Image (cartoon, rainbow, N blue to C red; front, side, top):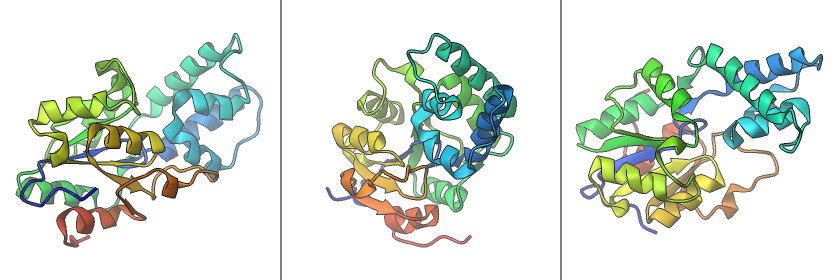
Length: 229
């Protein structure tokens, strides 16, 4: 699939964790704290970082070696979320080049938004604390739709809120579900290889239209120009 022509590009949409914002350091703290509460030693931080995109359930499984059918699993998931709420936004930062990219998009009249599987109770406060400028035009969370990614419903809602057609948008994500959702929505998709990708995953099989190994490479791909650091 060809990218939207520069004069026809109306929106750039991002997955949140691992694509727009580096939140891994906060989840490392949370997982280690949950393990410590159970008398378990710390895990290698890289293992935690690679699992962030898989959500709270996967992090509980990683932290405690438990499964979702365990009677205590939901209580542990709620505990992990409570621990996360305590550190939310404390060390999360946009990836390098993202603030400059958002500014360049605004100069060209191109909106930006986020489609995430992160619950709104966490996504909205995080975005507020980051205070990225220009401000976000559309934030769609699983609470806002009937079907989560990889279903395209969330991305189609982003487009409706931003007043553009899917073929006028680009979606960037660091997980196969992101690329699948974007493709099913009819968008040009970009795999963020700098994000939270597990060692046994193979992004070349995701079917993305393009990929970038650094967040700084997004501007040349989308706008055809490098931006100042």
